[in-house]
Amino acid sequence: MSIENEAKKLAATYARWLRNPQEALFGKQGGRGIVMVIYDKVKSAKTKDEIIKALDLSQYPDLDKATYNDLSRFFDELINKISQFDDQNAIKFTIEAFRYFQIALFTKIEDINKGYWA
Image (cartoon, rainbow, N blue to C red; front, side, top):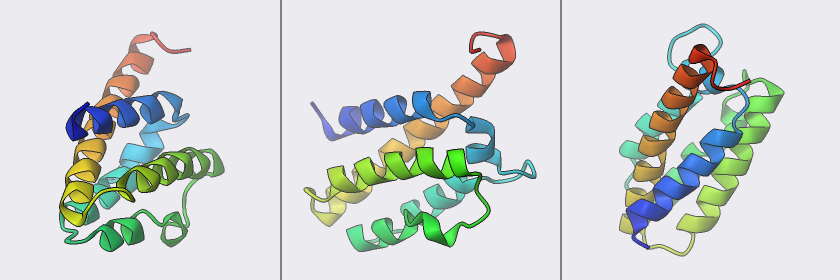
């Protein structure tokens, strides 16, 4: 399986489990949520250590407990996956995972609004 497909699979799995996709994407005030903020940091990262630092949820204190826990599980798995990669592939994997994670969360929000999710 390619790095991109593995990243998409990981992102899709954790997007399904996220209980509050609205908060993760748009925050409590309806602006930019933690996922978008971290995605910007990941895109500008040059090393695997910078990615791991960006994924540290302790620097984002205003999250609901459920969102914090759900994202912690995703980020722990993401860090576990990239630990086996060199810096370049770790960055590529993480960017692809975040890109697809955002798409999956947008889709989930649309499905919730249409009544497909309970």
